[in-house]
Amino acid sequence: MRIALRFILILIFIFFAACEDSPSSIGLELIPGQDLIKIDSINSRDASFQQNSAYFVDSLNLGASSRIIIGKDDRITSTGLLRFFIGIPDSITAYLDSDSIQVLSASVKIIPNYFLNGTTAEFDFTVHEITETWTPASFNQDSLNNLSYNQTDISTERTYTDSIITFKLPNDLVLKWMKNSRDNTAFSNDGLVFKPTAGTQRFVGFQALSSFGTGEFAKLNVEFQKINSIVDTIESIPSADIHVLDWSLPTVPADKILLHGGISTKGRVTFDLSKIPQNALVNKASLFLYADETQSNLASVASDTINVRIFADSTANEIVANTSTYKLVKSGTYYKGDVSTIVQLWLNGFDNEGFRISLSDELRSLSYLAVYGSIAADVNMRPRLELIYTNRD
Image (cartoon, rainbow, N blue to C red; front, side):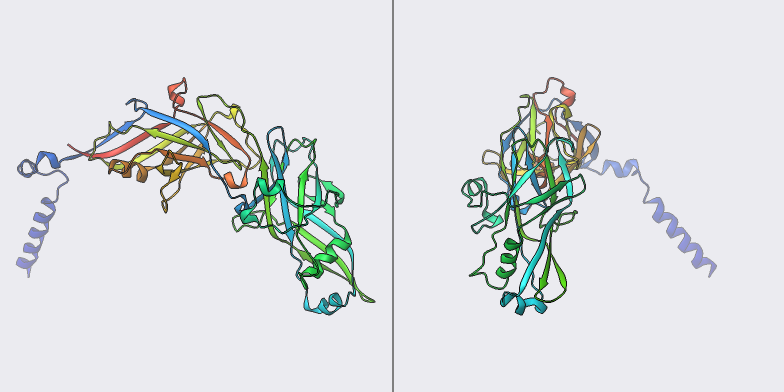
């Protein structure tokens, strides 16, 4: 038994001796030189990578936004559209069908969750009944220009604070909407258009119909009475909403890349990677972008991340379909994130059309951010790419 135990211990010792971190000189001589690997690093600043950058205006479907924004300033007018659908409980359908319902009061409550240009500048809007059918999926600025609506402001008793906006609607209009839920042939419900007034100089946003929102929906509270009965209430949320922009771009210096929410200006940053060995295996690639907040206009809800995608065709501004979105996260005055997968694709032979960058919240914001581009006078502020890679020796 003791002899067997000693034999096992000798075998274990031999096994671990053979698994040393560093091979013996005899073993090292047997490894071909081209198969040795080493970890190396390089960055676009110190290695003087050639780079270029630009920005362009893209398109957005604001009907998918998680926020409705209303307001204006010297460059942008944001007009909101909203339609409430009033669900009718079974207990009152017969009374509604027999015209035995009286609306006593109809009020709208909006909880703001977004402010741009502060909270003290003038803000006001008028509310109008829309008189044609519309859908958020296909609605745009041309649609708004041709929209049919009642020119009379139908809102009354409007109140504004940073935490709540309220106003009342005509009782007969809301009764028509209630009847529309039972008979959409004889009665129409095309919703409301919110038009910012001429003196307005800021923007207010609130929760839209999206699963990505975190605010509270606009609500319509209807107080009604059945003939010779008690007073009751119905509360409704929107069934459709969108905001539409009339805009011009801000003026930013030529050495900046403009990323604008709502309008959707996106950036393009391209690095020449010829100084990286072709057989390199990327362990980590980090992209840095430096912000110039003096040339930016940021909202109460911070635009603290930048999306990065890979271009399929930078001339046509097309991205590679079904690829991931990578994030650059704000840290002080710069944004940083891991783009290893994209860089490895380029090193593997995929056409290097550059990084496409955009604000992560561009669908639900009107903020804009200026980041330093490839011709910034201070080379330390230019976009920077840092790589740690494994290379064969």
